[in-house]
Amino acid sequence: MNGEFGYNNPMAVPRLEKIVVSMGLGRAIQDKRILDAAIKDVTTITGQKPVVCKATKSVSNFKLREGMDIGLKVTLRGVRMYEFMDRLINLAIPRVRDFRGLNPKSFDGRGNYSLGVTEQSIFPEINPGSVEHQLGMNVTVVTSAKTDEESRKMLSLFGMPFKNASGE
Image 1 (cartoon, helix red, strand yellow):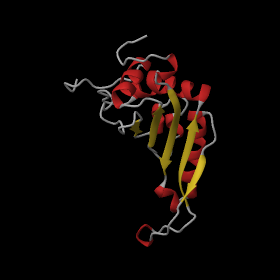
Image 2 (tube, rainbow, N blue to C red):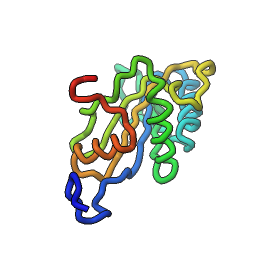
Image 3 (tube, rainbow, N blue to C red):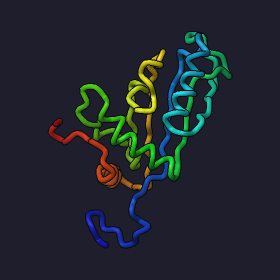
């Protein structure tokens, strides 16, 4: 049992806890159709209806009032989380143009990994012809790993295509 990281107990091995998919929609202040399209796309991609996030403060420079809808988020756990992870690694990420691997430094110091997706049309569920607005999203993979090295090893065993240290 004492392998690379020296776990004495099988329950000490890191595992996925949740995946959070979030989307900032600052442009939705002017056009409410952007919010509706984003809700439809995120629901299609994740299989779960997103929570609409509201502004907590008013910022006059951004023409933002407290309580306006400015974002979406979905927390995936269990079977949906593993299905999303599989589709992200095997279908969506390889469809990114000029893809050279994920940044291996995007860990937060506690074993969680975040990546940004520039457009929702890389997911096979989204019809690229029906996309009116290109919307990016953030994907955060929360693990039970204590360190970034443990998490990086676990995610690479899942098949995450990280760049090598040489940049290749």
